[in-house]
Length: 371
Ligand code: NAD
Ligand code: ZN
Image (cartoon, rainbow, N blue to C red; front, top):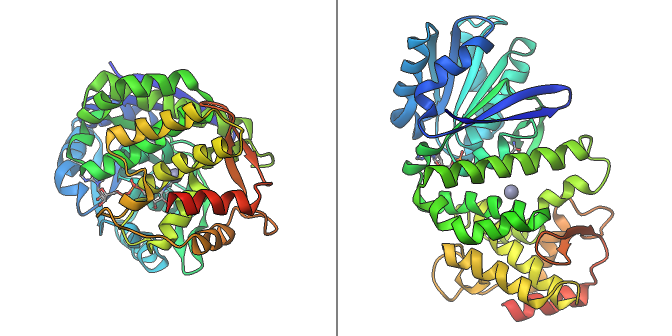
């Protein structure tokens, strides 16, 4: 039987079921939550051919009528035009308020479907079947849904909680290795933020998670979702710095992503992995964190196969970076409040904190050395 954890945010509680083979039990497990025995599955054109029929069959076995809408795979499906097309395709199928949308795919499909559910007929239920590790450990908790605009990513959206999340650990077997690793960076992040035992567990079991061990995957996803839910619950309205801890590695990471043009040269999770190594290096450099801890972070992320050295990022071993440009990107980051850079630094593994006073000389020094 699957592991189930309960997330209770914004007065809306829902379960996340985690385990192998759940896609084939989705109908049976979701049926009691459906307002009516009909769902519309939304997926992308990579995931749908692999898992669409199995998911639909599982609903049909539970007496639930299904329809499917497919969008092109990739981030561009989160733009306004694609969102408009999706809403019209959903409306073509004559939904009513009791229709439930089922998001089958990664974070793109999850964000898009969640936002569609929030506005379709002024709100219908939605269920998530996340198929990337990133979506299972990050976007399935917190209720953020939305799309991109020419002003930036995720600037239009809604907080809208799913009714249920089914994280099938075996669907990750078909995920490209790079995507799997990118998601793993966010898993390790939860240990580095405030759970040193979990990071130690990751050091011992990360390879099993990546190799497909069902128990290790279930545990990693469960602990990640519990961590994110705990941090989000402590700061639901983003009024304190607590929630910002989830951005560990992200100020550096976004700068690396921006500099590589968001074009897939560097996946978000890869950038976050390198960014976390940089955040720990900077912490050690500033005398805040033992050097040995910074080395542990770099060693573990590097050993599972994440690119943690700036030179190796984006393919070959000779990439060069411009420190001034990276700092400029950090300033342009939406988390830069009043021109001050916001960083998550650490006093050690599992001891991260938010700060706005990192002096530029220290940052320059770190970047110059790293490049
Ligand atoms: P994605 O959804 O683009 O999936 C990555 C690629 O893997 C896609 O090509 C997809 O078709 C393919 N794929 C997915 N599952 C597969 C499987 N099981 N087998 C084979 N191929 C598969 O990317 P992602 O990394 O899952 O998500 C990134 C998105 O998530 C971004 O848009 C980001 O803004 C969003 N996000 C949202 C939140 C949130 O809180 N809502 C949090 C983090 C990220
Ligand atoms: Zn992230």
